[in-house]
Image (cartoon, rainbow, N blue to C red; front, side, top):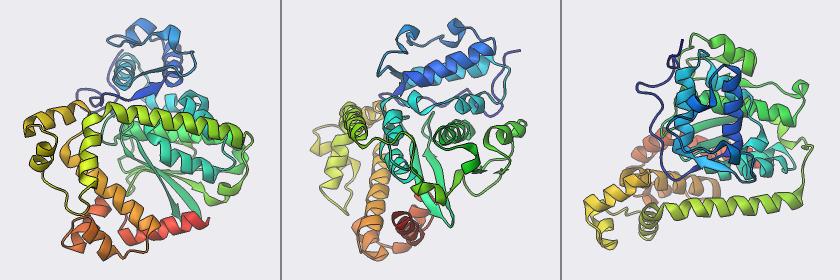
Length: 355
C-alpha cells in the first residue's frame, strides 16, 4: 500500500532550490529501480517536466526541483522503506555525468577526493562534501543537503550508499571496508544499512560520515587518464560558471562583501550599492535559493577555511579579518560550520596534505 518514507520530513522532501541541474543518469537509474518495485513511470513522473527520451543523451540533465519531485513521488508510491538507500547503492560514477567521468580519470583516490571537494556543487545545489583526516582513516561527510538545504537521513542514505558503490567500482571488495556513522537514531530498516554499507554501521554518533582507510589514498586507479581528466575538468569548470551566472544577485552580493573584507556591511548598505530596495534584494536572493545572512555565513566559512589551510595567520588574526571582535565567537561559529575547532581543522588539513 502506498505510503510515505518513514524518514521523510513532514510534507515530503524539502523544497528544492532553483537553478541547479541533476545528471540524467541519476534519474534513469531511479526510474529503472522503482519500475522493478511496480511503480509506473507515468505515476513516478507526475508533476515533473522530465523527458525520459532525453535521459540517455550526452550531458542530459533535469532541473533539481523535478528530481526532488520525482523522488518524493517514488517514496509515496513504493512499499520499500529503504528506497533511497537502495537507490544510492545502484548509482555509478558515470551516472554523475561529466563530473563522474572526471572522477574516473583520476590517478588515485587522493586526487579523486580533491576533485569531489572542488566540484561537489555539480551533484546537487546545496551539496557540500568535505574530506578530512582522522587517524588512519579518511572521513567523507555531507554538510549541505543533496535534496534540500539541510542534511537529513535521506541525504545521508543517498550519498553514503552511492559513495560506497562507487568505491567498489574503483577497488576490489577485498581491498577496503568502510565504516559508516550517523547522527540520527537507527530507523526500523537499520538492517538494510548494514546490508548496503557493511556491518560497521553506528547510529546516534556525533556526526554523519563515511570512513575509508587512508592506505587507499595512494593506490592507483584502473582508469587514470591525465589527458582526459584535463578535458573533463574544463567541462566541470564551465558547468560551475554556468551555475554561477544564474545566481546573479548572490554573486553581486559576494563581490561587494569581498571588496570590504572584515567589515561585512549591512543588507541596507549592500542593497543601496545595487540600487535596490532591501525588500527587493531579499526577494531576488530568495528566488536564487539564498539569503543575505546565508551568503555572509558561507563567505566567512569559505574565507576561514582558506586562511586556515593556506596562510600562516594565527586564529586570532583570522577572526579579526572575518569581522569577529572576540576570537571565542569565531571558534564557536567555526565549530557550527565544520564540526571541529579552527585549530583542529588546520591540523587535519595539514595531515591530509602530507598523506
